[in-house]
Image 1 (cartoon, one colour):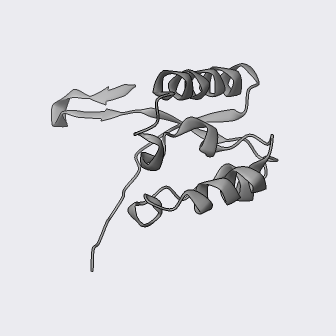
Image 2: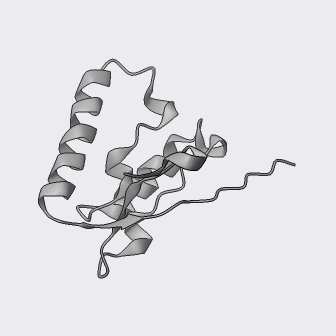
Length: 103
């Protein structure tokens, strides 16, 4: 991370998927409206299949009550490590501005 000490700012490196990945399968919408819809997550898993996807790196809230929490967490960790080993990311330095509004 590059730092600009005079203004107390750190500019991080972040990872984005490399060109060529199927971004329709890579991106997953994980928001509150799907918290109680197991059908959404089943459809997403069916659509993604074995393709690299952020679906394999998140823990949907709907599954928090299940007994296999540790197994699910291990699968997430394994997916993250595998994606790094496979070189699926490009590293970028910069800032990301996010503005969230609620209705």
